[in-house]
Amino acid sequence: MRRARACAASPCNPVDLIPNPSDRQPIAPAAATDPCGLGCQPGRANVPVPVIGSASRETYLPMSQPSSSEFDLIRRYLTGLGAVRRDVLVDVGDDCALLHVPADRELAVSIDTLVAGVHFLPDCDPAALGHKALAVGLSDLAAVGAEPAWATLALTLPTSDEAWLAAFARGLGDLAAHEDVRLVGGDLTRGPLSLTVQVHGLVPRGHMLRRAGGQPGDLLCVSGALGDAGLALRHLQRGEPVDAYLRQRLERPTPRVALGEVLRGVASAAIDISDGLLADLGHLLAASGCGARVELTRLPLADQVAGVVAANGDWGLPLAAGDDYELCFTLPAAHARELPVLAAAAGCPLTPIGTLEAQPELCLVLADGQPWQPQRRGYDHFTDA
Ligand SMILES: [Mg+2]
Image (cartoon, rainbow, N blue to C red):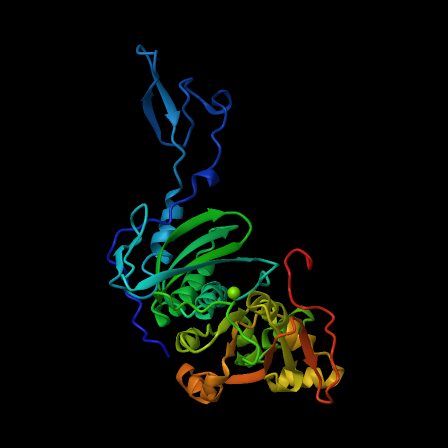
C-alpha cells in the first residue's frame, strides 16, 4: 500500500476548473433579445465597452458569464481533491497550476477519456466511475515505472446532478489520496457524459520502463488475473447477477503502481493491459522486435473465468476482453528467479506465462502443445465500433 495522506480540505481559493470558452452559450443577435436597443441581453451582466470611432455613445456588449451554480459545483465538489503535496506550488485557484519537478526526475504524462456507453454503462455507480477515471491513467504511469503525482480532469455532464457529482468526486478523491495524487485543475462543461483525466508522474531520470527492450529468451509475465473485468461486463450486458469480486475488478480496478516502481531497472519491457493481453502484448512485441510463445494453461485465471474457459474452450475472455489494468512485462534470464521477491514487494501475484522468441510472431499453445488461434486480438475503438 502506498503512503496515503488524508484528503485535506483545500484552504486555497477556488477555482481553476473554469468553463472552456468554446462551450459558453453563443450570444444571440441583439435584435431578438435586446429590449433597450443598446445590445444588452436580459439576465446577463452587461458592461460598457467603448467603440472606436463612436465617442458620442457607449455600446453595451453582453458578457457571457458562466452561471454561479457551475462555480458552486466546482468549489463544492472538485476543489481540494487528493493528497496535499509540497511540489504543488500553485494549486487550484489560478489560471494554471504550478508544479515542481525535481532535477533528478523526468515527467511522465498520460491522458484517457471514458465515454458513457463506450467505456462504462450509463447507470454505473458514480463513485466507482470516479475511481476508474483516475485508475486507468495511473495504470499507464505504472506501466512506465512512474510515481503518480498530479492529475487534471475534464468533466462533461448532461445535468448538474449534485448527488452524482458528489459521489464521483468522492471516488476520484479517495483513490487520489491513496496514491498520493493531487487534482490540480481541469474543466467542467455540459454535454453527453464523458470524463477525461490526465495524469502526471515522476520517474528517475533515464529509468522509464518502455515497451521496447524485450529480448529473445526473456521471461514473459503478467500481474494479477486476466479476464475478470470482461466476464463482469458480459454478465451486466446480459442482465445476469455479478459477484462482488468481478464487479470490483470491472468498476474499481487497482492500478499496479507499486509493481511498476519495483520493475524499474529489472524488467526489460512493460505495458499495461487495458485492451486485452493479445493486443497489448502485440504492442510490446512490435516495439521490442520479438515474438513470443505463450502457454495458455499458465494464464492466471480466477475460478469464475477458468470456469467459462473450461465450459466452452474459448480463451478469448482472458486473452482479449480488456479492462484488466494488469501489467505485462519481460524479465531477462538473469532476473527470472527474482519473480517471487518482486511479487512480494509489489503486493500482487506475478505469473510467468511464456518466453520471448526471435521469430516475430505470437504463438499461443494449448496443454497438448497444439497452437490455438484467437478469433479476435483485443478491443479497438474503430474496428470494433
Ligand atoms: Mg497503456
